[in-house]
Length: 125
Image (cartoon, rainbow, N blue to C red; front, side):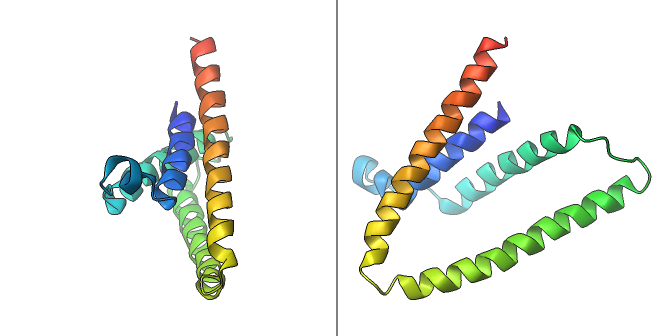
């Protein structure tokens, strides 16, 4: 079920990026709250995947801590490069057309993931 929520969060973010909340509902949800809530679900998703691995119990806490720090550092490095490139690209008119297309595709992929996960959940009950 966690994976279905992750799929929903992808749809949510694509819809938010396209300004859907403002246009359809007349308000903008609190972005910080959404990041916190969906971030917790993404973390739970990763934790459930880690449970499938046969991890050695010796130094487990240190290994998990090192893994999480590595993931966060990797995300920060990737984000630095991505934000730098997007910052320059935003100055060109092609950015807005591309962002609309990619956010629409992002939502489509999120709907596929959400449907796939819900189908698997309800057919295995």
